Image (cartoon, rainbow, N blue to C red; front, side, top):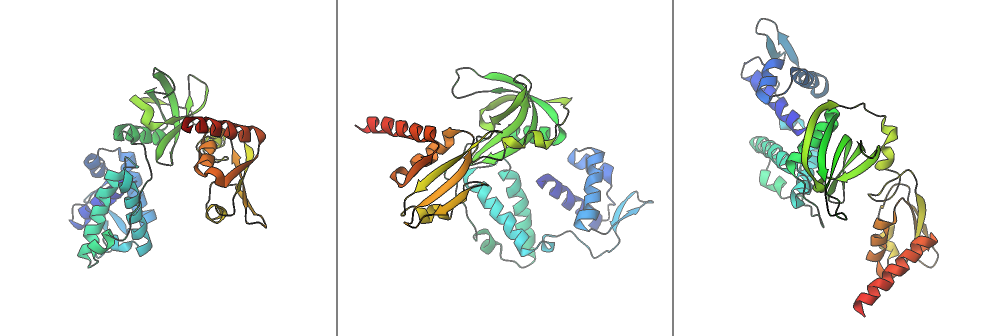
Length: 319
């Protein structure tokens, strides 16, 4: 998306310089296909609203309205604010391999705004963001996987599961890239397992983007890997988990959104019961322990017992 915006501004500049750009010129400049270039030109007209007019004699485009130019001043304050906030969010912890590309885009935006009399220094210091933790991702791997998802091509890579001594080789059909709590994940169909699998990008190495396309499956067949339960661990099967928070902790939990489908019940004594759908206990156990004695597992019984055993192990460490 960011590269496409850069192509838009290059095309606009060429028109205003009287160079009559066209799809082949755009394709050569950015090393993209002419088909992609034609889609960009269509988007300039249909989505951006640029008054493009094709000149058959010059074999290129011009503006039917000579006063038109594609500038950042055409963006609303809300759109500019959204871009700057996104920049800060990605900048603060290296949370995305796209942060460098976004920074370059924002620099162009800020320069144009400054030329229009808007205080760049003020804008640049209006917003900030901090990540509590994140896991870095190799930029090349991210870019290749992004291309694979968009073009529906198979990828081959080595994957290191932290609980196993040796890495495994996988050929997968990539469907979706998901960011969750400072980490990037790939949802894909694994040829070896003949099933849907979720891979953490930071554990992928030696990746190869093949030229082999795969038959795209309906999103309904893999949506259960990204939604339905609370947390990163998703499955078609999940169950309700009910936690009871103390009256002291309840006001803080009450204002939090843990996941879609959550239910809150505030008791007369000030305690709060939170019910959420859970597919795997691993993450929810860690969240329960974060709240210490301020939370109690009401149900299910096996989760309650698992937390009891974990607390006993913790107690043994300190005794």
